Image (cartoon, rainbow, N blue to C red; front, top):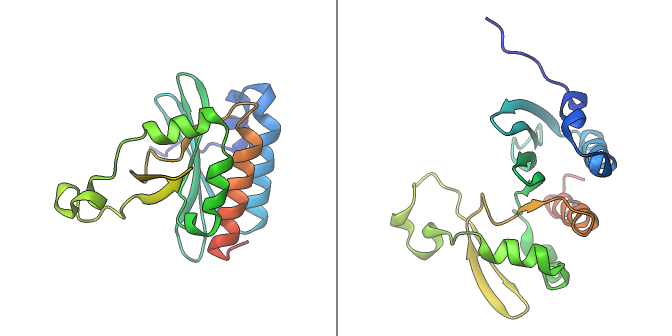
Length: 162
């Protein structure tokens, strides 16, 4: 039996009206740059993943949690825009600092050897070593949406894929 095929419009129908423009803007910009979009149905709703066709590396996911829409940014080039972290809204900074530590950064034997490792960075003078999969898992809110758009743009620029 064939797997059902989902479209971005299927995903968008589940997005709160106040965040549809944000989601459409990110989707359009990434597709325009050649990123491949993959949409799957998960327990909490759709998972939308974007990966570059040449490198196959993911840049971000849209996903749903109980609170609503989230973005998971894979910040591989965080070092090139780390100053932006010092300007994050308090709610985003709190979400990042609450993310679990990266076991592999602390002790490489404590995590799966295939794990690509997390992020080692500073926010307002404090050092963090956070898990790649939870560090930049951020809720889309009126306050966070413009900052998320800026983070995504900076990541695209850092990868040289924009």
